[in-house]
Length: 149
Image 1 (spheres, rainbow, N blue to C red):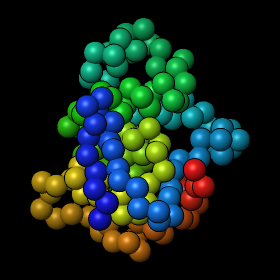
Image 2 (tube, helix red, strand yellow; image 1 turned 180 degrees about the vertical axis):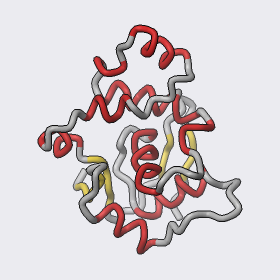
Image 3 (tube, helix red, strand yellow; image 1 turned 90 degrees about the vertical axis):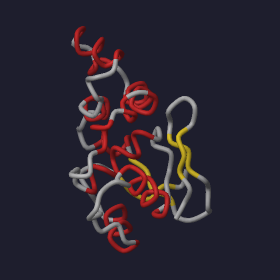
C-alpha cells in the first residue's frame, strides 16, 4: 500500500510509485455539459468558517473547481463527516481525489487513503485491487479515469 500523510496545509500527501494513475477528468465533465465547479461545490463541508461564509453569501457556485478543491483539501477534508465509512466507494474515491487537489493516484494510493480515512471501521468495504481498479478504469459518473499527468 502507498503511504499517505497529511501535510501542514491539510492536503493529503501520497508517495509516488510509478504505477498507472487515476484522476478526475474535469475537462471531460465540462464537455459532457456538467459543471465541475457545481459538482465540487456540493462536496464542501459547510461547517468550517470559509464554507459558512460561502453559504452565507450563497456563493460556493461562483468559485472555480480548483478554488473549491483547495478549500476541501485545506479545511473540509479535516471534518470527520467529510469521508464517512457509509459513503459509497466511488463517491469516497471522488472525495479523496478532491481532498488531494485531484493529484493523480495509483490504486494502492486510493486504497491507502480510504483505509486511513476508515481506519476505525470494524467491517471495511471491499477495497481489493480488482474492485478499485475496475471502479476507476470503467466509465463512471464521477469522470474518474486513467491519466497521463
